[in-house]
Length: 400
Image 1 (tube, rainbow, N blue to C red):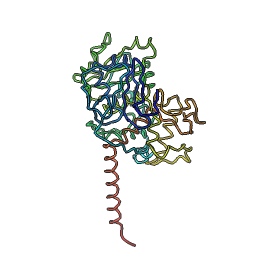
Image 2: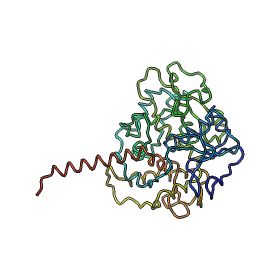
Image 3: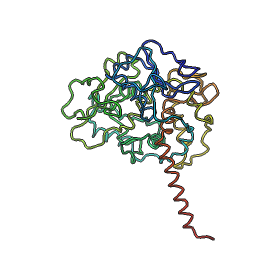
Image 4: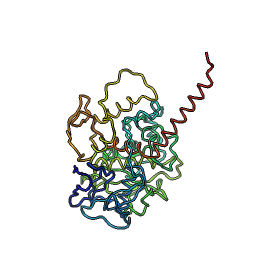
């Protein structure tokens, strides 16, 4: 569903709720979420909406019934066809172009850690599929941020993160086990398509008791155990296959090897991925974000040569395009404004009616995260530090 006259013109159908994340005067960016899905995933539906907004926007806020009204309690239920607003302390929204966010981020070279080493390290921590217990021969290492994105895109996410308390200063390799879990092939498939996502609790808005009791897996071996004070819960955001959903029900918690000291999956990456999955299946109004990000994103030319630098943004973008060509779709089910779903370049990338590359859910997430106050302050600090180093270097160079 789309809107042409701002959020006041939104009409949410029965059995859904709307969550407005950016209330633009022409057309908002919002989620349209099935009520039955919310009820199956969280016991506190209003708190769940706050979590979704926080994971996508990267800023704290409250829930309200109108963009100008007072916040409402998080203890109540949701109205059928209701529209809710996520209100933040930021009154104005200064958007930085997505391409600028990419260009200004330093990215490392390719990771040195191999994929095989990634799987080996995961098995030392996980032992089996953490949700089903199937043997390693029937599973594989699952990347939270897809391996096809590459470490450059991975570093863009970490480098443009909002204000999180987790220490991710050394999280720079897409094969770091904090970016993975060991999972069955079936889970791997539906996770990569973002039909399912991992909800980590506790988080900023949800406690471990705010989601339904864990769906305990049968015949769990005594060598693994559930974490004591946290949950890594598998949840279906797009349960379109009843057969798989029956085999793998909602709210199955991960169990890890007893006595392991290896780090668990990163909260930061799990929240990012959950937000991206929500944008993919429920997001509407992506064109509004495109309009805010000026100038419009230009078509990406083919790389001119094999050279690489730590600031080679074209490597990042071309890898992203290659991942999309492998089958990724644009963000949301119905973006506001004209659309040419299915149109593609020779490279297989989806484009809009003006020939511009369509944004997918990862573009939307990076746009919001890179525009957060924490990300902008982090970037400004880096610019200042680089300027100071350059000035120090100039002062140390003898005059000819």
